[in-house]
Image 1 (cartoon, rainbow, N blue to C red):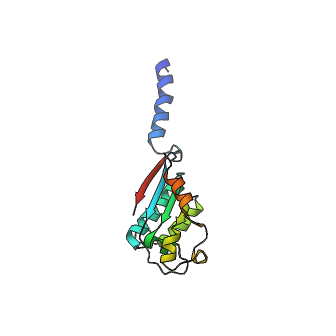
Image 2: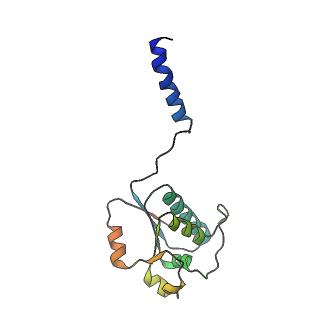
Image 3: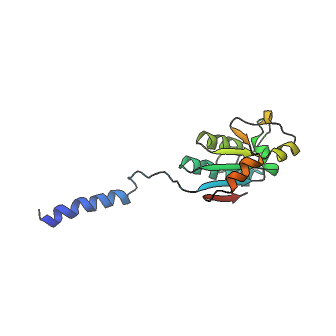
Length: 147
């Protein structure tokens, strides 16, 4: 076997393996993804929850802020419809996101306006008090998506 063949054969095999999808992908990191969720309507709420879950699962730092009618997504005794694309409610998907490290914050004023108390919330949800929220929103690495 020629010297060139001995050098290039392993190189080409390595490049072929990388391009074939067999290589292990590193987790996505970098910017913090902040999902501002203002609705409990199944389609946008379900899509936002699914994106937050997938981002958390990939290693992104994820924060979901439930405000206005979005606070109802954290109410454990509130009936919710399932999103056809996932077969889950937005709340179930948010719980999965929490299990993968996402933080879910609820607007205390909106919660009160909606007739909810902290005892009504699913496990893992935090009150998004102004000092906590404004500290998060002032971060340079924050990318905000709003639903």
